[in-house]
Length: 402
Image (cartoon, rainbow, N blue to C red):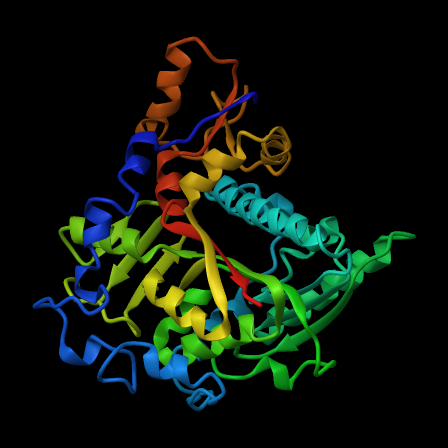
């Protein structure tokens, strides 16, 4: 698999924030007036004059935290606690086997990039994994050679599975030095982690928040509390990195749909209504085959950037999955990692095997490459349906200012 192909070259080029995507949030851009924007939505909670300024001026005031049983957090807990633990054999038969591996490769490349940055100033790296799930990133931190990891998640069953994975990894490591780890069950949108750490003075070099932060945008208070947890204990020069759905892309696809829903046989996104998107509490239901079917909340990224300033955080980059993929795949090491992780499907299919999608149109992009005869086969790709699903995401990185 010497050649890897962006499955949606033409579609991806329309996914930038220029044109349609840039206009999708016209009603929530700063103080610009719009008939779709009510006065109460022009500013964040508690500030009728200018959004974010009051909160930014009061960095020491604790955020107002709702009672823990309120909101959609309990649905998220129930969902992830009830997810069955599946083996590799079962996962490899999934329609979204390559999609899941592709997203995992994205995380690997992002984490590796920022571990290397921190290693330039210290070899003693401490990390906060905010929304650790069952511990899917433990091996990435092991590869990065970090010294200490704090794993936290809202789902207690997931945290226990994460801790068991760590213990198993440590037991099998023989003479290899494995990082120390701490495990916390906590709703990071409503509880302060600083009150729960074993070391009350702990500082982090990296906070990683993968496919999780958007759950906090149910309210301003929740989004702010999670941001505080992510950033307040970072060292100067430390990084807050993550992946999250791209609000611009979601709204653009919704506005292009004839209904309140869009997607394909792999994923579905359903909003309650279209045409008006509040800064917080803009709920939608996201379904990904076999994986997720819980309420999520739209993240208007410019608001996140402004909110982060309260914690001395500066955005250093934001990239779509397409942009990040096209950048990293030029690196031979990352290209080999794609292959090892089986993040792309081989096209044409090997003898006695089938492509994950039975739809011919899902591979038109790959077939055209084959027909021109100028590449070495097989090539690596995702089906168009999978690419549509993964291209709703972006990656981000903030740096803590001194």
